[in-house]
Image (cartoon, helix red, strand yellow):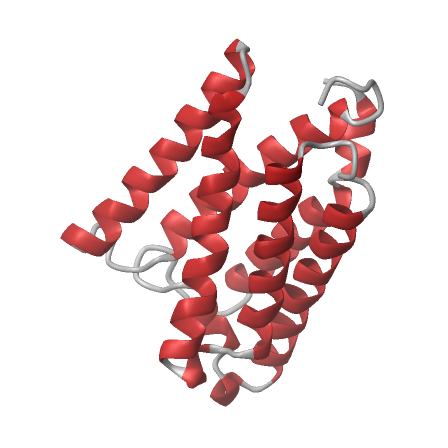
Length: 181
């Protein structure tokens, strides 16, 4: 892989690594039984401040990317990135303490991420088909979580979605310089 896509997604890589580090440094957090949003509960003090700030900032960066760096991408991709960035920002603004509102903004983010991957099916390439299939795998992981409570916490499906989205974003942003979008 070329360096440019990695450089372009480096803020998102840093955010993901920061999230994982925060989870590892939080003694009560269990990746199998918790959701990452549990880290953002107001009662968690400094952990919540760090988590909610990280999530909101990452969402804001995604919004900036969607309206600038990703400009060469087709409109459906940009629209889904804007929706994803806005919803991700709102996850940090409305932590789990806000109940259903938090659930809805989280759902919007993960559905936008899945849709972003699935919309790659309109590309006539093997890469596009693979990314679309990855989106469907994400949908399956979330379906297993909500239907069968497997895994019991949302952190594993969240992590699968975040890593998949990061890989997709790296691929797409890497193509923006060469006019292949």
